[in-house]
Figure 1: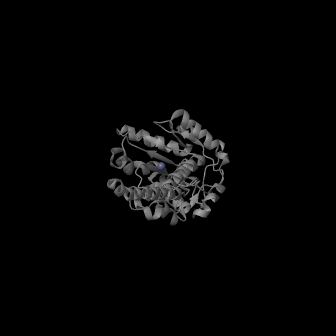
Figure 2: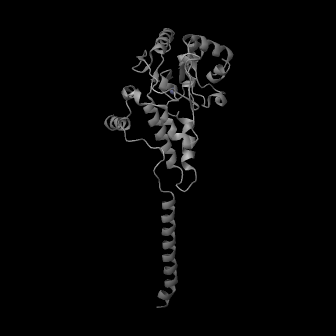
Figure 3: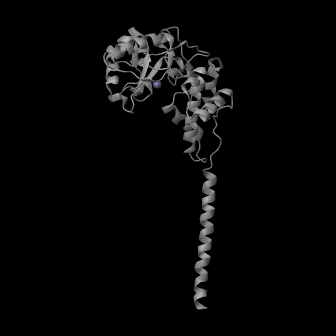
Length: 282
Ligand SMILES: [Zn+2]
């Protein structure tokens, strides 16, 4: 009997403890519950077709990137992000020529920008038809010297870029507790650092090619070295060089090559300027 009496307070406190811990866990689960992201993809045909493709084929097929209807794009897309600190202006083409259009987080493509596409050598990837002719010459010269360029990504529609951007926002939101103030703005601000906003990617203009090696370190390959020495002869530049983050807003990307035309590429190669610096002085 004495033994039972001594156990009672222990059981009582254990019960209280369990109740307190459960209550705490419940409160935490309420606080961290995911809320609907503020910037979501409308369930329009573009998103659903992409989803269908992903379901059916496991990955987003490159064909889809070409097939999207470009005419649905207008810069009003970007208006959705205004409340989150993104307010780019529409880039001008006429002053410096189509091949020198500036695209970054402050400068986006004009409405309904049309790209004439053409396949590039060594892949089924397409880029701007005029730029493709220069790329193909570069590809042939490289091949002669035993360098095989492997393009991984070329033209992308603005709709596809939008999907990439919004997926990124959703990923980031998952990591921010629901009670945090300005979490939407924070997520959009973070997303901008790694994914171009819709209509601001050079891939949307068909002017850039991502050239890759089989592993992640393209910057250490012979292909990269060859491009650094020769790409300017064919009008291509390394768009995001090391040490230019202040001007470009983008970290070093050894695989991203942009067509700007031979004259501009040669001049930038000579002076060591990035595109932002070059255009500022024009
Ligand atoms: Zn790229």
